[in-house]
Length: 230
Length: 200
Length: 194
Image (cartoon, rainbow over all chains, first blue to last red; front, side, top):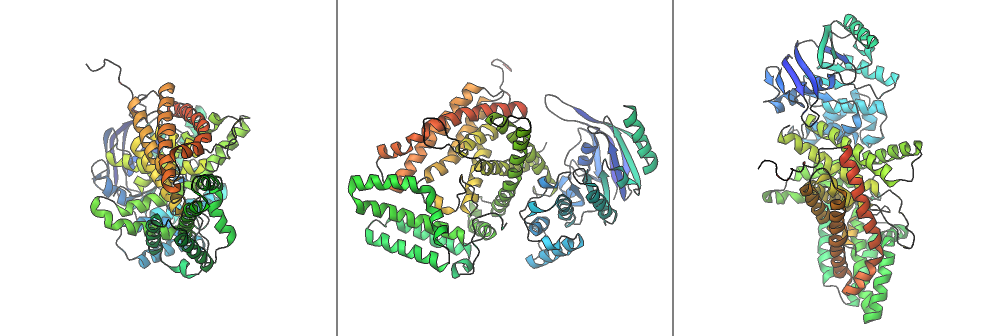
């Protein structure tokens, strides 16, 4: 897995034309990458560049050599995305159906699809809820479901946008443990800084610029200085 | 899905019959009621439908619940036809109407929502040549089912916020934030549809 | 912004507004002074959906909503559902929702941004009252074999409430378009790009 972000800037179109990213250059190969920054620093936009949800207005983003602007579909097959609010991510009415949604075009027979879904739900401790309505799960369970729904298609990279912001500390820590054991590479943005302590590399965004790129300890220290100075 | 819908669980023959077959029979029955305009035929239709309710073990209360919302209008129609052309005509018109309403309701009462979605998708398959996309129709129905609880939560949150601000009597102070939040929710849902490969 | 992205967003908008219609079915009926007939919020939802989503998406949203009712979700005001309602006397109103949402949507989109209240009220009255009642009355005639005057009389008590709803839907639509711009295309100035 290799991500190249080359001279990327982004301006949201429209009457207010906000510039949210400017002159970002970075190459990512590590398995666990953290992203931190204040609200509005550009980190959400940066994450959405990685699976082609947003095509940059300047520069280019490549995932394993695939340009996200030209090969969006292939890129999305490799790169799964978890949003902050699992409620807007759950598509199907029941837990098992939602996880199975990602397999609907896999060509696998129905019973094999179900078996794969059940194995993954078992792994996430959701097997007992397989046929329950997804909207009745707890917040932590919903976020697990959202992750399972993405992981069923076996992406090589999982991008997560503040997956613990809506959760209590116990559930946030639980998601942290689950993330640590995941098979694919992970790019995770969060305000829960302790989740990043064991990560390989942490990027700090401020005002649309990449202002620090370091090991977790020094990067988090830089971020704290920035926040306390402002 | 069990928490939504009007499905009455059971294991009668009607419950076990495929939803698509029940819809087909209903369609035939609907066409037949157009020609059902004499009192003996209407009576037979009513007896058959009531018999089917008994067979499916669906109680009187559930049966009446299907007609209750219509009572004011049915009364109006009854008075009108009795006055204009006599009680027999009124019975024929109302009887045929009630028989079809009850028969149609029986299909949904004995079929789980997921079975109905599958039946609709299957029924749309022959229409593929006309440009219909059965899988997309199924996706839309399930997305719609998903959005019902989603919006119910938004309604609760917005009315709580309105309460907290002491403005609970204004329709505008309720509806504008509700719709704006619904639009934001749609943006997020649209984004996650893309992320999960719906545009394939 | 590629065409594909707007398609997924369209799907989401269509589904969410079917959910809005369902939510409006939960709103308790409002009783106006002088009329004994309660006002339910759903025909208001039809006008609002048209005024916000535009014709194609609004019609799709109403179709989806009615589809959900048909497969057995109790989403009509008062917890009604099942295909039975399509065999009932109000079938004209229900199918009329699709046409009315489309008509209001097309006319509102043509009027463009910024949303103007007088035009919005006029469009809602045309669609949500005149056209909708035409559909509703034809449906009732077909299902109950009454005469035209009798069918009109049966529906007359609901008309004042629907006029209020048409005005209210325009007021709310204006509020929504102000808070969430971008759904309507900006009107060109009269002599621009000459």
